[in-house]
Image (tube, rainbow over all chains, first blue to last red; front, side, top):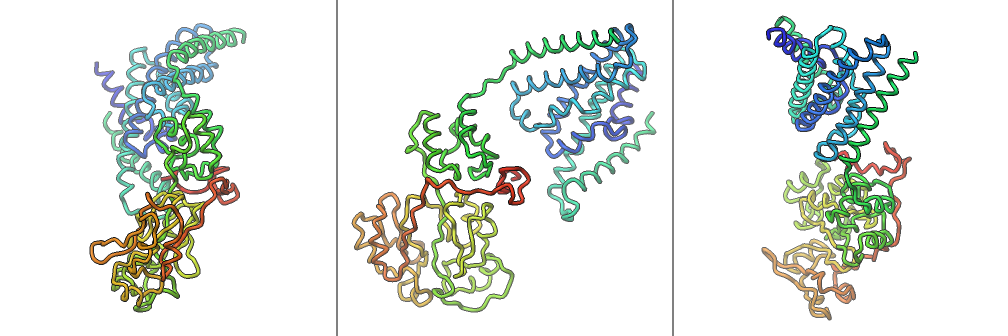
Length: 191
Length: 296
């Protein structure tokens, strides 16, 4: 039980996928302007991440390892992720059209979101069992959503703030991201 | 090598089948009229309709949320085509409105109280003794409407008054809201006769401060065959007002008006397909008129 707890704390706070490992920066900066959109994006990425995390683990264990084609890892994983993203897109377009519109291009871009591929590969590299891989994926997706939601909260406040003209928009967002990343360094003493 | 190829092919096949089934199951039905309307649209994505581009406008039209005549570049021929697709009559669409300035007090006509040398802004000028003009009802001539117009439809004329280009004006209402004197009004394009003065003061006072003011002589009221013009009492004083629902654009009142406060606007030709911004006009996307509506 303790192991799982450590995995979760490690994935959410200490090794936060965005702020400590710098994966998935594109949606982190792109979809963090509004709280609702960032929650939707966090949900969509979490769904894809957890599913792809478990499917790729099975794939590695029962296809890639027995046939000794480990070098196909990246291609095979990307194939899984792309198919899953397509699936999520269809479901979302059918059931939540406003969210589909709010996410826009960032939804198909989950395919190339390195956070998803990153977690899948981390699961394999750390040699985790299936349940641990699942928990690790869950933790990382929670960490991703957390980073996005925190960022969008700050950026909604920045809208009201009196920022020098040349710093408005992307520059101040990058500065904020850097400060958040430094703040998350403080968690490294947790484990 | 062979194993790798086969396993990838099998995976691809499985995913393909699953996605194919899901695609059928979660298919979203799109109204075919939307596609049809998009193909009819001018494709300028100018934002004149207030929607983010032609596709969004087509969707709104099909949903019954947008008036087809809001498409300014389309012109009358487009309204007919939209009506044909939608199975309605183009005549039933609400008329397009454009902004009209209800003041003719230019440099020559209006008397000034003092020379304003402050910041070029209507609100600020108005804060100094109700503006530099002797008339407290007219245009301040500092061009806030000109600056607020997202379509470049307002230009400051030689007489200091803003001139609205009815071909470019989309009736977005921004200048009407901005004007501190409420001297701009949205009027349907078919209504041509307008009283271009809002001065409520007595005839002599009004004439002393502006040569083209409404002097409440009631000549328009007496001569109107349709009983459409009246000198109406307002909060204090009165001013001539045209009832657009009765006016037939005969122009008798404009001819009789001794100060030419009543004017006939030139009829605009709805068949003219207007030139919106070309891609060379510093626009980020081809066909974008740089109206900034989408950036909202």
